[in-house]
Length: 278
Length: 262
Ligand SMILES: Nc1ncnc2c1ncn2[C@@H]1O[C@H](COP(=O)(O)OP(=O)(O)OP(=O)(O)O)[C@@H](O)[C@H]1O
Ligand SMILES: [Mg+2]
Image (cartoon, rainbow over all chains, first blue to last red; front, side, top):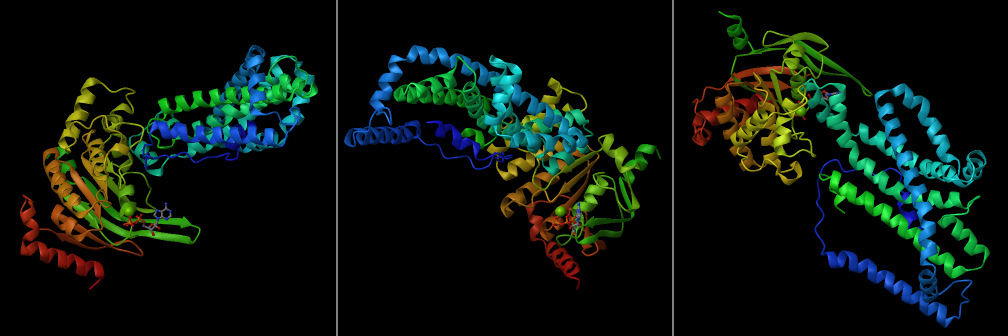
């Protein structure tokens, strides 16, 4: 289930389409939603069949029915523990992306800052999050703070890279046009660079919407009494594998909601780009 | 003679202009010893093979590039002054519209910059210009919803909104099919007549340059120089019949020979 989320991270920098070329032909909504739904259904049925035919014990791999049952029984607990995860991931997403955007703006206007700080950002990125988590818990305690910081760290780098790229992805002729019109630096920024960067920014926001949830959950594995991450650890200790799977599904649902919110915002803001009309 | 008359008589004079670019392949002399001057409210074409420096010359006039040697004066001023006082309009080869702005907002962009906002009067003027280029009713279309020819018309309207005294056009119809190009050529002449600007028009097409211009400046490449200047003495009313005149064909042949270095 987590892998649904993971696939988005493989492309760190996705080129935003700057020109609204190539509008995709419209597929009927029924087929657009129906086809993947059918695929999931087939997989679930297959999974159930394998569990029944080979008599797989529920604590190794539970059948979909067992998972569904556990999900139904524990729905209130799952929702209760989703709340802190949502708060941590949401706050981390906002903080990490905001800092990344501000830094990108600074970098684009002040080359020396980029030269000085970009290597630091790259270095921070290379340290594995699982290694940073215990350090942060030691520093910041077991409250919301370390989880938010980790979700923020995960969101920070892709957006920094994409936003710097996006703010620079201005066509030469557009820059010439603005020079011809004697536009000031701030006019060039607000009327040109900001818009040019939007498709780039949103492709990274879509990635970090889901990775920030992963970050929050991983952070909850260490020294936490609440959250979906905590539930994952508990379910594993208790060999309550159906609950473990149910928690994973809940985590995926949270990530999907985050992703959808960003996609809707993108569709509202980036009306001119072909990419946003997926 | 008033100062104003002097300015309209010699809107552009180019004196011994040269420019050299430093590239990874060594230095490239794009222009060398280019001198010419243009009359007020004239229509001049720059014709020449690819890479002969037509765009470069246009960019020098528009103060987007600095010449390495020589000097340019636009309306008796430096190109920089002409640019900052908004006397220049520029039409780019591939329209260079901002894809996030609809047609009207693209056209009014030049008024927005510097003022911070567009007034209702500005919008009205934008609508008038869109009507002038034949795009009435397409004000709120995004560039991606317009055809190539329509995008070029929007970009012409955008260049005209500052009421420029000099309009520089860099192969504006280069990417269009011949029929559309011919039609836009006729429209351009109509627009030129109602707006009284001085136009410099860059093109690859011999027929287009003959049809449009009062004067064709033929350039040669490596280094970019002016090979010859040909005055086109065709009727002022350039209707499509003009293309069928024997003189039209003679000019085309003459320019072709010049281009091929015969
Ligand atoms: N910024 C630049 N840096 C280096 N060389 C340049 C630059 N701009 C132009 N040149 C060179 O100057 C020469 C003239 O270029 P220019 O674009 O003016 O040609 P052109 O006549 O407009 O050609 P085309 O018809 O293909 O547009 C070319 O050899 C080109 O490689
Ligand atoms: Mg050119």
